Amino acid sequence: MHGVRRGAQASSDLAEQRAAEERYIRLGEEAGRVLASRYADDTQKFLSDSARVLRENPEEYSLWNRRREILLEALRHRPFDPQATLSPLPKTAAEAFEEELALSAQALQSNPKAYAAWAHRVWLLRVCSGVGDHSGARPSSYAAQALRKELQLCERVLQMDDRNFLVWAHRMLILRLMQHAAIPLNDSIEDAASASVASSIREATLHFTLSKLLRNSSNYSAYHYRSVLGVRDVHPEGVLDLREELDLVHNAIFTEPNDQSAWFYLQWLLRECTASVSNGVGGQPGMSSTGVRPVPALDLADELNLIEELLRLTPGARWAVHARANILCHLSRHDEALTLYRDVLPALDPPRAGMYRDLATKMEQRAPSTLGNS
Image (tube, rainbow, N blue to C red; front, side, top):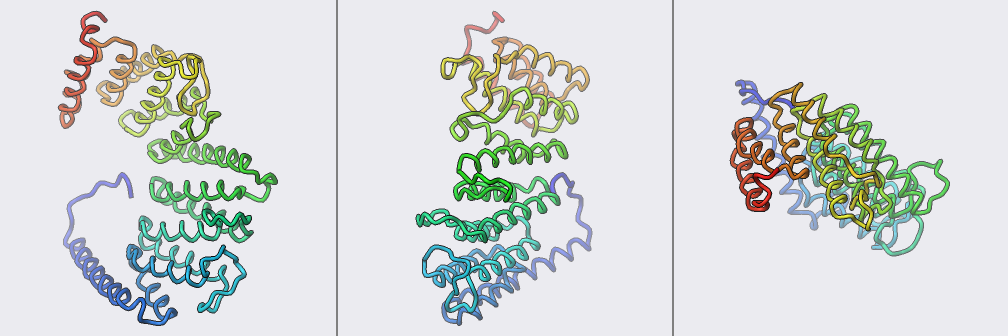
């Protein structure tokens, strides 16, 4: 779990570590034996043996690969039909895929951050939804149900560890599959047109990330995927409201001024908005080059006052000092910013003193004519 300090290991911990190492050696040897006979054994025996290994050791990606090969051969590389009987597997395609999803879910219980198991689930759902098969057929009701159940699984896992970045990435992949296949988030959305589905997915993502941030304002992934929604190349109409985003991040930095995740998001917001004001994107001052909705020119002086108020309440908060230096640069108050980078921040944060002095040197090289005049 995140945020848990690691202490000195007791003798019992070392014994457990040795037992775990012996277990992994045993599992690795067993996986090697199963893998060596993946083509020699009959299909049913390989599926049974590999499932036993993968439940305990889900990182054996070669075993997952072979299982996918077997499914593709059984499907005969045709579009997914949940009712089709697979040969030589004595089951329908839907039954076979349900067994694979159940196996990967069991595997993830032993290691929720197993890349290979999450990749296997994405492959299964991509195949059953028909994304990329170029058949033009509409996804089956089975595919729609499977993708919706996958979102529910992601939510359950994130309730246990809301900063599991693999689950966040997996959730976004599932949403993209639903968007490409024009599968609505629930049956109540009657219009399954791509634009309608895309709009509902954006709104659902904003709501979901906000709920996670209200529960834990130190959630990097939630901030990241809000910024993904703010990329204008992806969402030309813009989906983020700058004032609402600033209110969100202001609450976070005043609640925990030494947590860096909210400061990174504030830095992104300020960079995008100040760039839009200076560049006049689209000929409209205040229009962001990202998906942040058009707003009047951002008043950096107000942001600076807010940061300085925070510093009065929490003197020496280095992320606040760093943000103050950044805003001073945008306001062309380079002498003050230079002092913070060269003298104040290295004293507050000695391990990164070299980085701050390097930033000061680059500032002097970029704007020598402005120094001494601000």
